[in-house]
Image (cartoon, rainbow, N blue to C red; front, side, top):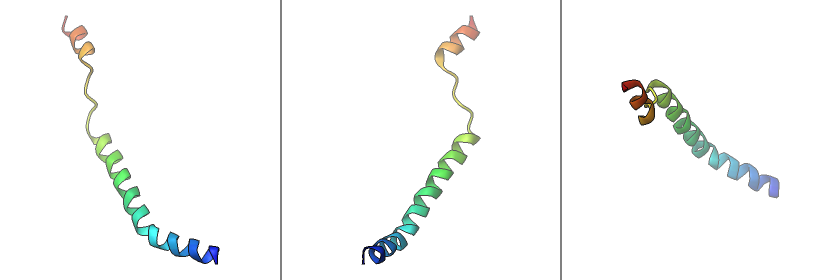
Amino acid sequence: MAADAAIFVSKRLQRAAFAVLCIIMAQFALASCQPEPTPMAARQALGQ
C-alpha cells in the first residue's frame, strides 16, 4: 500500500521536478553567457 502511494506521488511530481530542473539548467546557461562584473576595487586599482 505504501509503495503504491509512493509510486503515485512520484509519477505526479515527475513533471514538476523536470520543470524545476530545466529552470535551474537555463539559469546556469544564461549565467555562463554573461561576463562577470568586475568589482569596483579592481576598477579603481587599474585606473590609477
